[in-house]
Image 1 (tube, protein in one colour):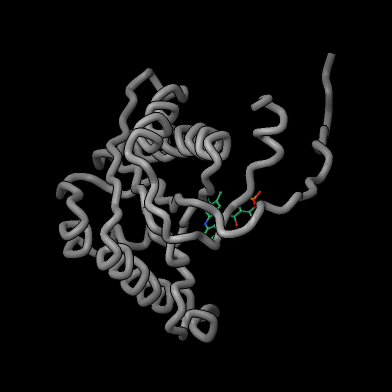
Image 2 (image 1 turned 30 degrees about the horizontal axis):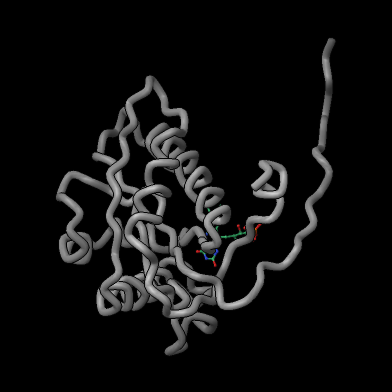
Length: 184
Ligand SMILES: Cc1cc2nc3c(=O)[nH]c(=O)nc-3n(C[C@H](O)[C@H](O)[C@H](O)COP(=O)(O)O)c2cc1C
């Protein structure tokens, strides 16, 4: 796929079929993530791949409760039995890093850059993805992190879902780059 079509064609996907994702495809996508730039080339990421439906449900349920506590304005929207966190996706990937106050911000940036590589690679492979920002709330629940196999000294940086999209991804529009100044 041409790079421009890939960048502009990728959309966040919130409806998936239950078709399992092939392991080799995921390995290729994870590898694409590792080609992202990182601060001082530390490559701090560790990947947790979750296909277990019960665990994905646990993530959604626990996240919902944490969001409701932290963001009262979302309580009404989040009071539903529907999976409005992981959208019943067949797979959840957590990009994690070791906790280190000196690197908190850089670790997040590194993982976000890796995620975009992975989103583009997934799209090129016919898969859909969606960044699951709310799932980061789970960092305040060590019990759930343990159940997800995340070591005690690690945090979730970028959570995202991945799978076969149920429908074709829609076109989107974007604002033109807002160039405030171009100094020559
Ligand atoms: C940091 C971040 C957090 C996000 N968190 C969520 C989320 O929790 N749930 C969700 O459905 N989409 C989430 N998204 C996806 C955005 O809503 C989406 O990227 C945006 O609407 C643009 O649409 P597009 O990705 O299709 O271009 C998140 C995206 C980013 C970058």
